[in-house]
Length: 433
Image (cartoon, rainbow, N blue to C red):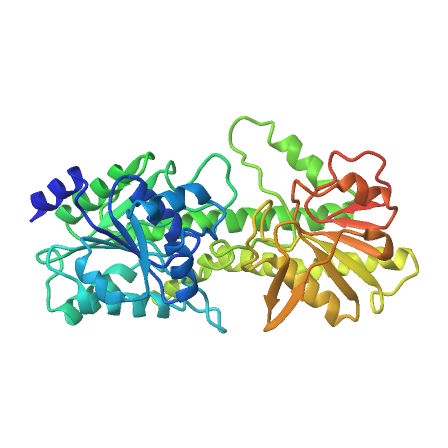
């Protein structure tokens, strides 16, 4: 069976399925189709499916013309009908893994997806989970569901593994195609097959590990590393402000060291789907072993506090001008969770706006990448960049296509949480985080 699958890969005859057509799934589906494999995307949202089938792109990291070409040539299609899984040789699951209201893993999307796969999976199929999750998910959750739902045996009748997504929206150098891939699988045959699939689709190196749990833990380590170091930068920023030291200058000086230091920067808190959430997956799983991830939990506390700290700093700046926060008009610049992307998932800027409004401020936002967003069930629409009518400007996302010279020249007090005004001269009205 293994050799038959490897032959299909070599001849580009392997049919590819991708479940979940979001920020991870659609770029992956495009790359599989681009490599010459007939690819089907599955999603429960008919709007996404319709857009894909019409060649309409909605993900920043996907090239519009490329998507349209793949659809027109028949290499890429999409459907809400999961029964088509019966035709798939290779199935990648790329669905959200959020936290619930108690900050515990919500793997309901993974569970429902793999349940659907189990109904239709054919003998000889390969299933790979790409969604970030806690160590043990593939073997403890997916394997039993697939075996019980299909009546097939893992390693004999189908193959199963985990290969964590590595997506960095807006990254101009690394994308799905050229980023190295980590693969862990149940059994040597599964590992060889899955690694072969990714090598035939992607340009980046494929690094094989001994089992899915190692690959799952590796992904958590990646994002926890960033979360912890961002927390360190944030704590340093709070301390430096009290000491009258420019933390941005400190970091720029420290990163001149060619070894032993990697620069991380402060801000209103990390956003996106991965960094603010993934460490909680590990903390939750660790409790099963009677272990408390003290450093991880401490870093999460620091980062979670940052929106409140930004509001405190905003209030202090207004006080200098004899204005209360309550009743002040504030412009927030940037609601995306990172520079130059149209994604505001878990963006701490939304928390900052919410806290400012709770304090009685009148808040408007401008973001060149996002015209509106929904937070706690309420839709808020952006405005044009007209800062002259505001009491304070708070920069929360450093988009490169914002005219910061114009913003500073307005003379309005500015709280710059991302050092976006670094290259602006004559900025006596700017305070850095």
